[in-house]
Length: 152
Image 1 (cartoon, rainbow, N blue to C red):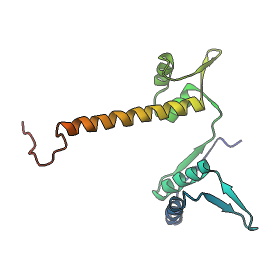
Image 2 (cartoon, helix red, strand yellow; image 1 turned 90 degrees about the vertical axis):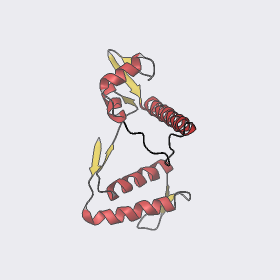
Image 3 (cartoon, rainbow, N blue to C red; image 1 turned 60 degrees about the vertical axis):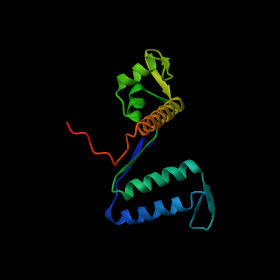
Image 4 (cartoon, rainbow, N blue to C red; image 1 turned 30 degrees about the horizontal axis):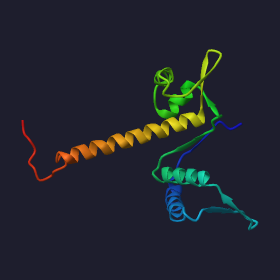
């Protein structure tokens, strides 16, 4: 079974991918349909269209894309790789009951859907905190560009 696949951009594909990504963006509200050589068509599910758009944009920027197949349960190391954290941070999040996990013998396993929910919550909290910081800074004229900088 395929576990991962990496697509590296080739020079002649960059412009094609740029056009492809733009076309997907322009038609995203309509949905996407794949047409086969025999003329038959099949609607593409939205998550697949989103994944194609992300891949096309990434390749258009001359970056490689890796598709990794994951099961419904992750090890702490796999969860850490997805989040960009160390495995120990994931273990600490589990210990503090911030991230749901189950124990299978002596091994912790994290449900992929729980991890994605956790990531979404963290993103929401970061966005809220940033908005509050911007509001607070604006209240004190922190973004006033007319004032001269304070020199020490």
